[in-house]
Image (cartoon, rainbow, N blue to C red; front, side, top):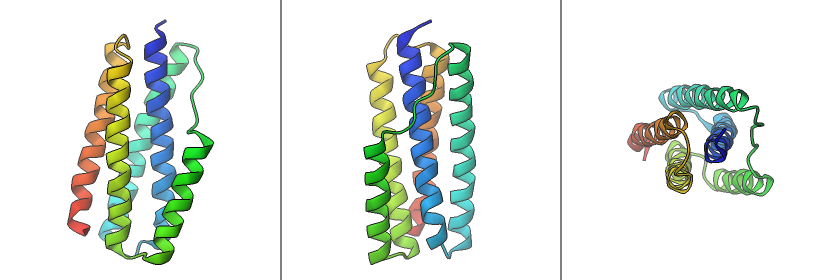
Length: 143
């Protein structure tokens, strides 16, 4: 068992949960069908990677990590305030792109921090970064 592997998987799993929560939060505000379809597609993709993290953690008899309560609360409050002021398609895409940027930066920093993590966990983390980049690119047309 490698602690770096467990830490990396926990962070990726928590990030997937935070992303899924954020996407679920904006769904009631979405009126554009194409944007709704993209959001639903990436909810499924985040759940899939989160489940892979959970399975790998189970192999190490390690528990998953939930997003920090403060990060989750801050994300929820800031999203609600932004959407109360302006809930058009542009603003929703902008909020989601900010989330993608945060995900890319944080997961990339965890990959660099946990250098002894297994190749399998690093590859999963890199696939999460790639997915966030693809999600961001898909959202750019709504800006």
